[in-house]
Length: 418
Figure 1 (tube, rainbow, N blue to C red):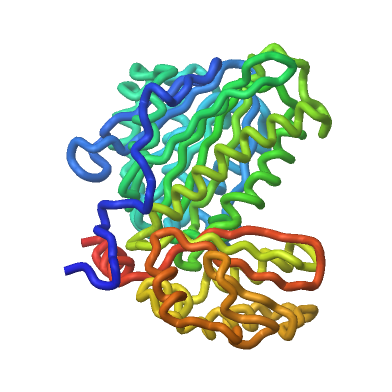
Figure 2 (cartoon, one colour):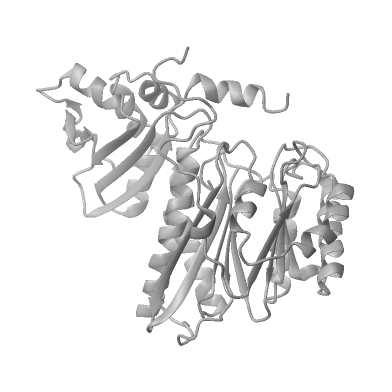
């Protein structure tokens, strides 16, 4: 019997299966996926994206000191050339904590794929996700690469999203079309992630492609700004991964004028990519391991955005807060304690107001006079919860997204390798 409204691990919180025909192909991008026998028999577990000449690729990567071999190789390849031609993603092994052999394995896959595509090895970006400190099944991957290349097509986005899943219960893929100078610009993205989700970055991989016409420098700036306001604002369990990567690709095939500065065209494109990235980031939270609640934490009235984000993340990473939400237990002093744990020197706790779904439960740092425990408990039973923190000290704000912490989370991670 499910306890405290716990969801089945095969469900995601108000998250629908992507519809294949709604995922738009990007001029200049082809995608393929295949089952290479890396995980469950018959399940797709290897994904490939290939880009036309003239495409630009940028990345933001994990800050974990034990970053995985494919992260090291991808960063090195991005530094060596601006003419990236493809990226390849395997599941089953993170290829992290594997030393020199792991580096050699990642490079081996790049070399095999480079031969098939008739490009240089440093024009390939490798990515891996799965169990840390397990050897990469390089022989299986290299053997599957020719089949993978033959399957390249512009419409394989849903299959690509399925192929990069680990503990995800649902593939994550989103598309939009926008107008820049009356020219249609298409944006499509896929991501994976369910556990080990926390900045910097928040295990997740995300790949967003567009046919927008933009310079390398401005695309990298956009990449970093988008990461900071989406993938770096989510937390499931407070653990960063060794493999986190967020890649933006622009094929430069749209006919609008090239974006080389932060002008109005840049704002339009940034808004479009932000919408895709935010939906993908929130999908990761909705599919958080064992999660039964999707929690939005908005912090406003701060002296700066960093202050607001730190307060939000201090709440989001508190196991006591998260378990209280799981049990729908209005033990909300835990939220005050979590805010106090943010260690911000300029935080005045005597003026903070706290709300759940717009119901004030703490005013000026103490329990609200008309606090109704039963009313708050009923609000906490909802699958979607909005927690607002007003610092009442400035004009800045930030939002973060998190989950509750359930028995199922422990079960999933206790059985992850069995």
